[in-house]
Length: 187
Image (tube, rainbow, N blue to C red; front, side, top):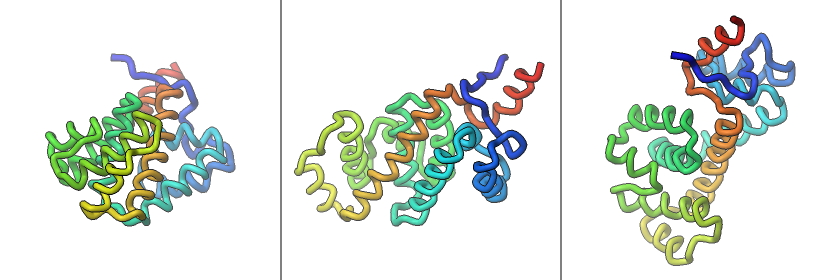
């Protein structure tokens, strides 16, 4: 079975431009394996640094991991980013999100009332590309979300939109298939 090849070069620490090396080396040190998205972004040191800084700051935010995984699933599904959907399904399951909840999150929904309103709020921004109704924001606040969390959710969704757009534009393969792609290119 042939492995998909990216339209963009998937760089590693040997092929990346020098300006991308600090981020790549940091990613390799912390994860052990370079995600294909990071390898692609390495082709533009400025894009890679911008992504790494924005995503890095949000890692220190107040949203918990299950909430971020639900948001990630919703955005990846919305943009039909196969690598994003596959990765975030796996991470969601590892973080205690059940199969039914994963399916709901992919559609900006949740069985949990508080999670559901947040997903609908962000979903409105992406699907309708317009200001969410005031009642939806009020509902989110009444269910315990803070303005800080709403803003962080929008920021987090923005990083995921960027990831999805790169995955789509580059036809980036699902993580784990790059080595086969490199071998195919070399043949």
